[in-house]
Image 1 (cartoon, rainbow, N blue to C red):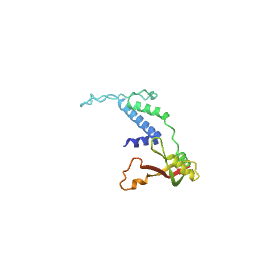
Image 2 (cartoon, rainbow, N blue to C red):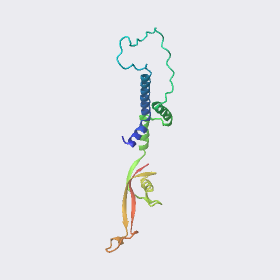
Image 3 (cartoon, rainbow, N blue to C red):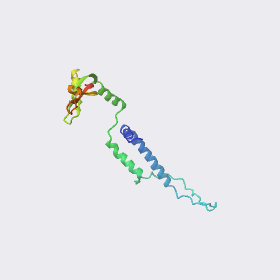
Image 4 (cartoon, helix red, strand yellow):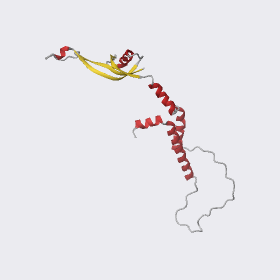
Length: 184
């Protein structure tokens, strides 16, 4: 499984995974304790019927109270502690209806518009199309927007097209335009 996919699964289903992991860990710990709390293993080899131990028959008595859970230092116990600690750090999960309502509220006021608005050049030389998206949305009566589609073109001096002219570093410049945006 890819690490990104595993992380997404852990983020989406944390309570279910924690619950399943704890249940599995407890079941394994219980089975481990039961298996090793049995009496000593039988002796190897063939025993005659006279040598075989006979289980003493105890009188019917009430069962003793359940033993107090003891600390079991080991990997499974440590993993259980980790899950217990992490439950309080994880945010509570929303119900499907709450999640759907949140998504509906995000999508409801948005509208996609088409047009053409120039992107400004940022101080590092890269295009900043947020301002272009805002301008495009404001021209359609909205407050702000996010760019969806950008068109890039090269604007050159007419001298570049003359035969024999060697192109210089300042003869052409790249322009970016927002052509579609989601507006609110």
